[in-house]
Image (tube, rainbow, N blue to C red; front, side, top):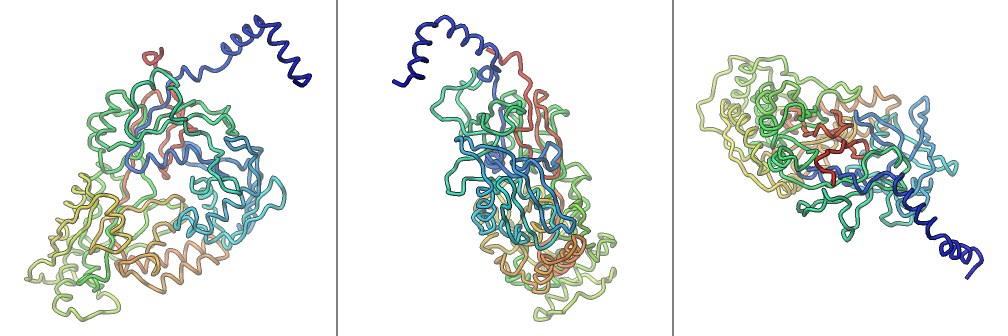
Length: 532
């Protein structure tokens, strides 16, 4: 036995009372993490996976409750005057396993994402990153082909979590997964957890662990209606990820002050398969576009005008982006539907015709006395989808188009869109960053299998990656969006509202366009009734 170890052993034998007293003193002074109940979260659908991923991820940048960018593993950053370089100063940080986070780890993580190993969508959004290097041990520089300030938000996503460069799953995020074999941390956690629930524990190695209020959380996947019911019974503190489903129940049954609504960077639209029958005719696609009364969708579906109508492909409020205005946007619905009937009659009378551009609209166009054009609309098998479909089906029937529904489970519906197995398909696109790119890139020739291909639009997107200023880059993207929208690549419908249910005991929640609510930002006021 070494001298130091022997001395320690003798001290522990000689002073048992002192050791016991010190232990009791430390236990009294230590924050009572094991006595505090965990935050109980029900996350709807895929939101559970997203919440857990964000809780585990250590990223260069992070977001505050209002969705603004704040330091993460990078304690600061500096953007060059031309916007083509961002230099990050790294803080001293460690992974949950104890290893130090290094600049080499950051470079490896960014390069993995650029190569598509964090997902194809992330790789497409990183097309403007030309190089990443570490000029100093605590410094990382990103070089860009065009000014892209939204890259800071991209770097805060769990997909861009910094991991050890030599592989492994060690993370440097605010939470870690609790060991399934651990005893419940509190009596409140003792009952059986919901199916699929994940228990999280605060990561003591996290660089800002001392600033976090939450010691633990339980995140469970849930269906919308069940999540609302559990919240109303007091079984959960927070419901995240609400959309169309469950909003009615949340409005009617939950306390008004508990409901948090937010206009997110999202669009609901109908994808159009341009390889299928009548939909190959641009006149038919334009007729569908003109017929829908988008202005009525927000109030009808969300009881709010904050759910803005979408006439093209992107929602309002995307940073400095100025989306194109539809050429028919100022016309009355009656005039639009009259033109839609004329276009359909013309297309059915001359199916081989393929005019380069639509004719000027004529409000007094005669109606065609022909049977309805029947189209199949693929939808996810959710109750709320039916309300949306009912609204647009009535508009289309008014111009001579009859919809048949093809409901599928959510996973099967997503696969159908990916493979082009549909005529029309209801879809939702969410933007992880404040940019029009997530809404536009899916319509490039090589990015879809439903026949949408405008080479000129693709060229404009490619040119945007070399634009010398942000304004020029966004103008090129707006020009591409106009081409896709006028071609009928998809039928924009409405900007959906997201919702959450928040207990009065939960602090740190604020509406934001990203729809992200990291658990590390939240606080939980103990409920006297839940204490042992």
